[in-house]
Image (cartoon, rainbow, N blue to C red; front, side):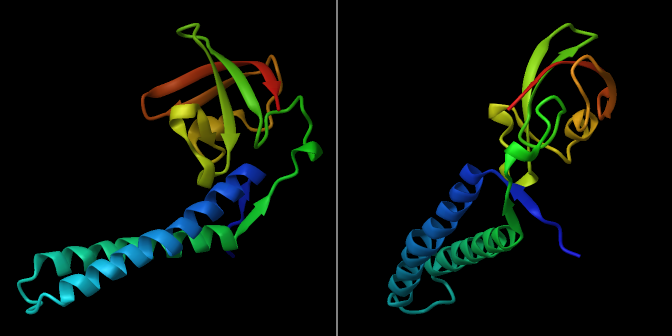
Length: 157
């Protein structure tokens, strides 16, 4: 059975926009480049043609992957989640008990991960470890660098 991709409404719109851009902007540009390169003659040694064909393959793969993600996507209604329990779309403020550093993560679907903005997947080790936990709970999470001991300080939406 195929896995459902749970997205925020914003995440769904962003993916739809990426797909639209790939189909309506990137694809036509590369098709035009292929046509131009083809008009130059011998295709065997035409590096512009081969580069454009390779780029076309990359764009078609991107389009296909976005279509698959969107076909399995469902928008989440976060009003149905308990605001006191860490779940998808929660902002979990945690304290690393070894370093005493405090960090806030937003738990999202794998399709919406943005590590630079502290959006982590519910399928990542930390995401899995935080899911369904409450404020005050201490969790131990095995990560490649060892075991993290984290205290959940705050949960918000």
